[in-house]
Each structure stands twice: as C-alpha cells, then as structure tokens.
Image (cartoon, rainbow, N blue to C red; front, side, top):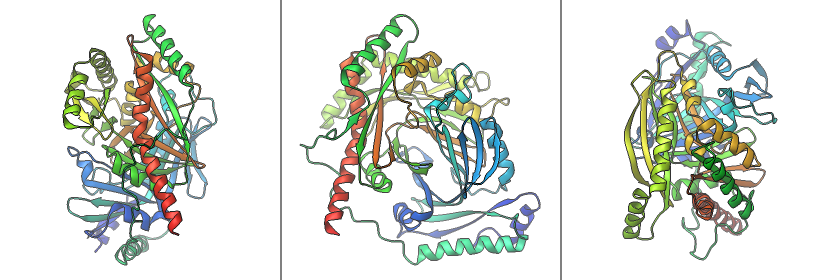
Length: 502
C-alpha cells in the first residue's frame, strides 16, 4: 500500500515539482546485498554502518536509477542529466548546489530516516581549494566533485526487518493525477520484482580468512620506493624542526590488478573490516569501496556539528591479553598522545570557524576504539552551526581533515603537494551524503579501495611529528593498508574458485 495519499500528493504539487512517494513492506527474508544484486543494473550506491552507538547501523541505503549528476569539470560545476545533457553550469559549488535544489524543487515530506534522499558522492582531497583561497586550485583535468541524485532510495531497517521504498516523482511532464499514477506504477514494479524473489547471494565458496603463510603485499606495487618514503619522512621532520608545521601526514598508494567486481570487493570488505562507514559507490569512471572508521563532519537538521578526530594507532593483538597490552601502550605513548591532542585542537578550530560562539566542546577524549586489524585513539568534538553559515561551509571548514593533512592545515597541505608526487584524488577526501532536508554526513575516504580499469588502489598515511621514526611510519602505512589488501586477496581467491566451478 502506498503511504503517500493522492490528496497529500496533490496538495504538495501546487508548490513543488518533485514529490516523495513511499511504502514499507516486511522484508525478513531479504538482505541488503540481495536487493543490490537484484537491482544491480540500476544501482548507484549502497551505504551501511557497523557502529553500535549510531542510528545509521540500523539501516542500509541503496540508491537506484540515478537521474542527475552534480560534477566539477574544468573548474565549472555542472548539473547533468542521465543522458549527459547539461542543465546548467555555475562558477561555484554552492551556487550549483542551490540551483540544483531549485531545479528539483522537492517537497519536504521526509520519512524518519537518517538519509531520506539527496545527493551521494565524493569530494577529492584536492577539492579543499574550492573554499580555501590560500591554496591554488587544481589545474589538472580531473573531477574534484562528483555527486549523484537517484530517483529511488531503498531503506532496509535491520531492527524491524522492513524495507521502505522512497520514490521521487517528478510532476512537470504530466498532470498531477497522471504523475501520481506514474509514481504508483514505479513502486509497484519494484515491489513485484522484490516479492517475486530476490536472487540468492552468490555462495561464499571460501571462508573469510586467508592461510597464515599468504603475504597480502605479494603482487602489489607502491607509488613509493621505500627509501624515498623514508627520506620524505625526514624531509617532513625538517619542516617540523623549522617551525613550518607541527605535524604532517605522508601517504603511499598500493596498486594491484584484480578480476573481482566492485560488489565482490565490497561484500568481503564489509565482513572482514566492519566500520562505522561502509560504502560502495559507482560514480563517474570508477567504483569506490570503503570501510572508513572516521567521520569528517556531520551536520544535523538541527544544525549540530560533530567531528571525530582519529590519531594514534596500534595493530590488534593475537590474544585478548596482547590486545589489552597494546591498548595500554597506546594510551601511554607520549608521541601518539601529543599528535592526538594537536588534532583535537585543530578539529575544535575547524568547527569553531562556523559555530555559534562558545558552543564548541570536546565530548569524548582519547578513547581506544578497536577495528579488525588496528586500534585507534578517537575523540569527539561538537558545536552548533552559526546562523551566518550553511552546511557546506561546515563541510569545507573541516576538509581536509587534520588527521590526513596535518597542522597548521594550509602549510601541511602545501608540503604534501611538494612531497607526494601523485594527486591523492578520492583518498583522504570526503564520501558524503547531502540530504534534501539540509543534513550532511561525511566520512574521510580512508580504508578505501578505488577500482578502475581492473586496478584496485589502496592508499594509507602516517602522521609525522618531530620525534617520528621513519621506519615505524613506513610500517604504519602498511598496517593501515593491510586490511584492505587482505579483503582484496580473499575476493580474488573466491573469484578464481567460482571460475573453476563454472
């Protein structure tokens, strides 16, 4: 049964061009992966979470039938249709976003979900130049912003075992009654396909682990020679000693050829490295598969802001006793604590730039949080967005995060541009949803795989401070990349096993 009545639809059609129509069904025999596979041809993204303290972990969001794309090309921001047609072009992102909302003109009737509809995509690390005027703009012909709007959002509620379908029905091309019936037909077609039986998930032929003698770095190429990386750590330390920065983040990228699909990689990654932010995006010419532990910034509909700085790392122990010992060592490591405090101060400063006076506070300080392969120190910084600022100003006040750039941020970014020979691109940028309701949630694009032309790329960084030991920082980048390379190896073994059985 369609929950949006014709009378409600008709009343909103007086002022709005796009009206959400929704329905909810029991879906206790379905899984989000089954649903994504069922609509694979039309699916643009899946967003999930494995974070017990977050409302997000109750839901999986799947975007179907992308119909608009907000992209940056040659320093212009364009809204393009699904056929590539240009709707408009603007000089600034904010202008383009505002014009996109005016064009879609969506009625504000939202189901009570963290993300009821809007745009999903990425902002590259280099997109900081869109708002940070002290840093030169990217002159390469690469897309720094790529967001997709979908006609339909599937929302899977894990707790209730229910599936909600939210379809955004356009009313411009036909009268109100015809538009409503068209929306009903779209939802009924989706329901029929779902209820006729979502295809079974491909069987997991191999367990979600690897033999202990397998080297996950075998066959992997880095964009850094080890000695060059160590030399660049020392160069960064020289900048620190000279007073240019207090801390800087140096990263390396690992590339490996793969035969697995992006969905195969995501299915494995969400199992072996569950994280607060899980995502699989098909955006532009690449697929983005991620399990990020770190929020960039969240902007609620009530204008509350939140950042979670992460700095300080140890590998997981092989036993509970070793795990506890490593956590205790992390909490008492003066170098790690100093780095973390520096980045908490930077997060406070970032939020403070766009917050109401005296609203900024540190809610949690240096909590040890465990992930599949590493543990981190995490804090929580909050504030209230000022009346003079908008949500995207908050996003770019936080971007790029100090945890992936350094402090002071502008000078740290300049040094990164000097030392790292390749653009970071999506790595250390932002994966974000930008809701029609004004909410934004974003994570830092770390623990992320980029898949393009059969090459999977994983990038990881280490925070360099005055007493950093180059060899240790090199190993830290490898430890952070290990979980992703581990997932890739599992997916490849599974892929090859399935090929043998065909």
